[in-house]
Length: 213
Length: 337
Image (cartoon, rainbow over all chains, first blue to last red; front, side):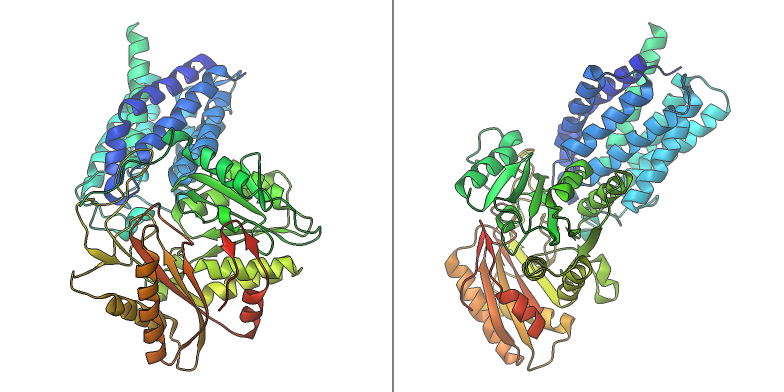
């Protein structure tokens, strides 16, 4: 079961991981964007972690909702809108049960993917965070349908997200600001897709360390 | 060639908040800061349409300098080069409400549109009605004419801000204000040019390639690249080819009257600006187009980018009347013709 405390640990793990990689993310963003993706994501997740830890939350859904609001209120921009919507959708998925499990988390991820696609008007292959998120959600769904445990589900999602993020290097952007320089970013991975991979990897690692402990 | 990285800031992460505090206190008769929003010190009369816009910072005087009588009621200033989030935009909508409806104007950039849409969803959820959104674009370099709605917002949108501001101030209802915004948008075109780039004050990362100092025409307000021009191209030629491209795109015949805007993207000297402006007037005359109103100076900047943009707005009697109505912002005063 994903309880309040586990959700807090996941948000904190994501914050630490993205903070450690923020310069690399900003560098990726400077190729076709404005070079602040890493700073923005690290700032938003630090605030998300603060709200997760300090807020008066009773469920995992409350924690994820608070994390989403941090994106919407602290960084803005396309990335803030999209990641905020994703965390909001995770919260909506988790809120469907008092004792949410891996299958509700994946339902939340599916809802998050749909919301990100709608808000961002992007599809797979457009060189966006969707290119990491879509395969991650798809593999997480397969894993949950096999009745894998939460750690295995997240590990499958993380592996697929990383593969998806790597594949964006070969894509030309057709959504967002980067689309004005379609050839510029050829050979460079999409920063948003990388953030998705980092967040899911941090969650997979957190869950596997808890199993070991 | 190097880009300026040393800036006169305290903590880059606090730069926007400190800018707002300083700017507002220097112009306290015109604007005030309320809950992080830039608002008019003397609010618009009750019953009139409130105008609000959110935008990334780093483009000043856009839009903090355009809050005031005959202009915006509220500006929601976001982080550097990033739209504010939906929560802040929703607060801006509420602050702009004078019981006559609120018009949320959006310069077309991915983040601005997404956050505006999320804010409208939140407004609906909160039971706030009477909010209209108009998405504005003008930059001919950003998409071909057949896909004009995919174009991004540029400096030409100052014609929209000015005229819709005048319409709202004189008491036009919400639908009429939205119609003015769309009409001016459809009659406005812009094109920008820049050489080199600037560094993002928070991350320190350059926007684009810092070694590349070629003149790029069609560059976006965040350094998105455009077409290249050689070193030997003179100012008059640059103005000429840019004006020709704008007139061709807008399909303006001889005898047309336009407003002409020459926007300083940051660090051009008044000398360069004036020389470029002179070239633009010559180019317009060659095409038989008359510049009946002009603006020249910093409108939408990209920090201290060495660049500029031209915009033309096809005038008619209605638009000229709106253009000439008084307006006062901390960063805008009406000057001559």
